[in-house]
Length: 320
Image 1 (tube, rainbow, N blue to C red):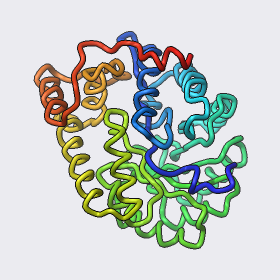
Image 2: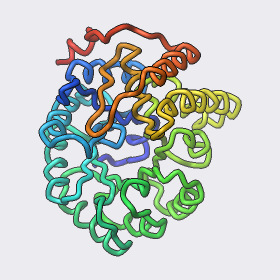
Image 3: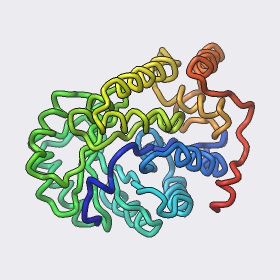
């Protein structure tokens, strides 16, 4: 474990999408391109197998392949976090052990989904997980997918568990964030990261240590600029970057207006930019033709280029 978590785990951490081929297997070349793209954009860390990485929809074979490939390519250039969320604690531990072998710096776990848990059960679960995994653990609040909101009081009690170093809060509830932030003041080494990028600037201005922002897959420089402006208290620059983030969110994430699933627009935008494939894990269908046109138009408005097909990045090839 690092001696100063806040200096090591801070800033913009990209929750990597998992590029897939049309047959559902990993698009390895696209993954390599994506990693070099976000690192060139200045992000402070990467996070494999999170929600943006569609981890629950991937086979274990692909998850372990992602862990090995990302670890080998990142190779310590920035901190690497790996998602280990699963309905089985044994499978979470198995993924954490693979992450440690691959050189990861921490793991991230949301509550097991499907069955609803009490706060007492949740705290006990995280205690048992922290005792078993070989890396520092971030707990992940994602009530929209897990049926349970990690209460601020539970977060505080989790700080007493050796090995738990921080929280990724994707609840989108700023009142929850404020309560946790106040309760964390007596633990200056505890790391508080925010998930929804629309709340990135506000959260950092109010004390968050950074953001795990899906849009940084597409436009890493924007999110780095937003974080750095907010971290140094440059309100005009932070507000300007925030407005760009909202424009991107409204234009790209809302492409599929029927489901509102943000990842469809994001993956298609990455494909249009020539970074990686846009195929989705089952059961999701690709965007409709009119929706794809909206994403292409949005990229043009945002000043991001469109490429016919992604090609291997020379830096990615050299990193193999």
